[in-house]
Amino acid sequence: MKKIFLILLVFLATSFKSNAEIKRIISGNENAKITIIAYESLTCSHCASFHKEIYPNLKKDFIDTGLVKIEFRHFPLDVAAFNASKISQCKQDQGLEILETLYSNQQAWVKGNTVEEANNYLKAFLRNEGYNIDFEKCINNKKIEDFILNDRIDGSKKFKVNATPTIIINNEKFEKSLNYKNLKKTLEKLI
Image (cartoon, rainbow, N blue to C red; front, side, top):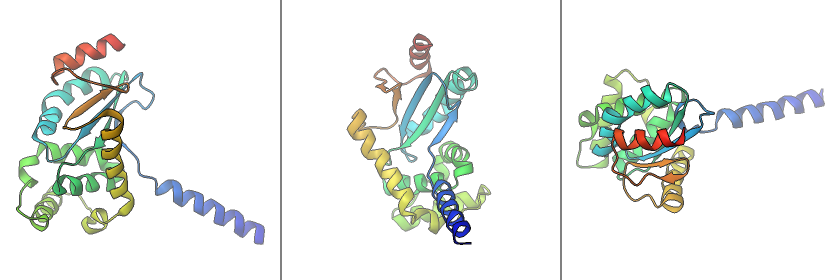
């Protein structure tokens, strides 16, 4: 009986640990030949432009075909972006969808003169979009907070990220002007 209890306890502890793991927000085939890392801030207008103007073509031509995967990493530039990042990481099964919704409707929620006002706009926006999120639980989750801050620290240290968006392709910083034409040329050389 003790053995069964110990096995069950080990199983539950292992299951809990793996379920509690924070997963990176990724679009594309996990085993794609090319990995793009996009360091972004959810309040950055250039990041929103990337999602509206470049990402759809990138998705159609490279991600959906299995050639490329993109990992979205957090590089919040302010508290509103930091809290929005926490929200996108909190709903693991909807992270990419939330990220896209936040970027495509940035003007609707990036408002307020205080942290409280910014949070209220973000909370109201998410509710209006139909997301069922425990807002306070998400923005006060220390594991998610550490995960996001570590993205920012790693980006600064490893790739010298100092602006958003910053694109990394197969561990090399993309130094050209960020537009689809330049990105496409670079990716085609790697295929």
